Image (cartoon, rainbow, N blue to C red; front, side, top):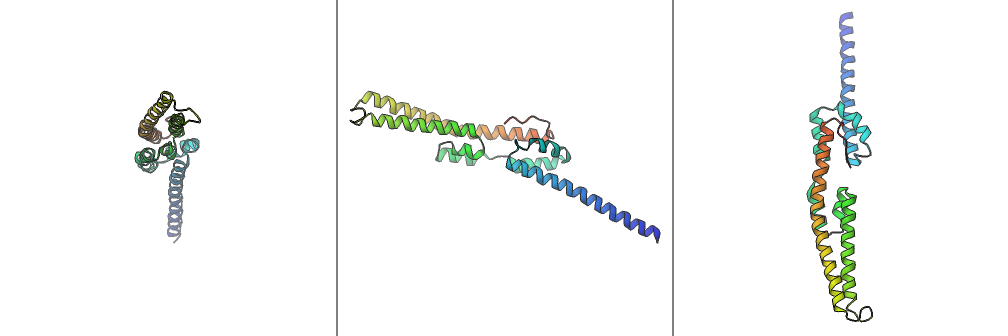
Length: 175
């Protein structure tokens, strides 16, 4: 009877120990997922502690959840402009360049139109054409930039995310 009691106690202790170990791993996975969804750069130190405890399959699953998609940012930049798609993807530099380019182009084209009206330019056709043409060129360059920036940013982000996750946090994140 005593052997049966000790075997039962050992079985319960083992069950509780392994269940709590699984809970810790699941907790680490959910924390890593949460950190990757919020701001991976801000939580880089915590991720470096959690990633070695996860197996490669879990890290690849995290990559699948945390990777960014090109299409939403690309479409928003193409349809709306103003760098909104880049801001949406978490790319403040691309968004700022797109926004600046669009605002400069609209300002230059508006100046060209204003130079044609008598109170401002009195019909100075040459200056109006130069301003409007410069605005159009800046707008086209800004649009092309806004179409390619989300592709470049997402590819770079996903590449660094994969390297960071697969190296168990040893790869230096450069964002």
